[in-house]
Image 1 (cartoon, rainbow, N blue to C red):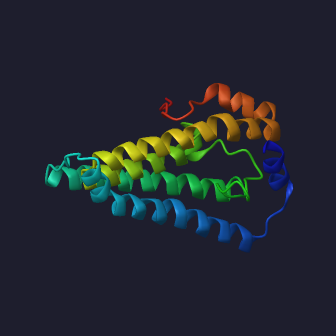
Image 2: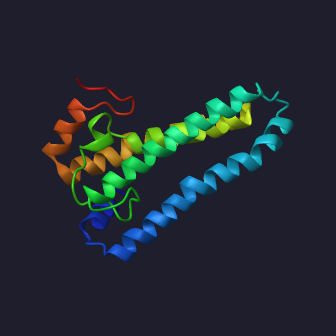
Image 3: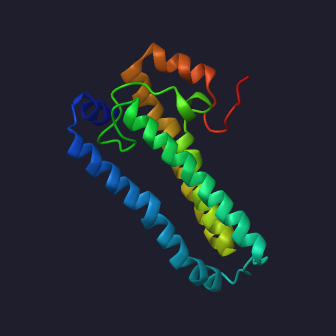
Length: 178
């Protein structure tokens, strides 16, 4: 599988291809997954006999704050990948350059952190324990993918520069630098 990633990274992708991959990725992760979470919330909680965690305005305020903050972080990370990296977060159209600026200066996976916060915000807004568990499972799968597949591919593609970046930058939880 890592060889396939390297093959994709070798190709020069034209602007329409990059735009199409961004639209497709945004549709799946920005709209598709949240819509599925909303649609499944009441059904899963009812089937699993889980009580809704509804605290009125707190759910709405905290959920929207988390969702908007996560969305903003993910959007910033995508923008930096497109401009600085000359690629996209979609593995079929990867960055051409190693990206270490913007949110990537604080952690190696700011887009993943943003998406996880976005989905957690949806779970809090809905007050659904089942959706919260589903989001944690999605997060675990994403993080395992990043740790064991994507990082290996980045090491192969960017070599010592990535290894140095990996050594000095946290995986997920940002370290605010002085």
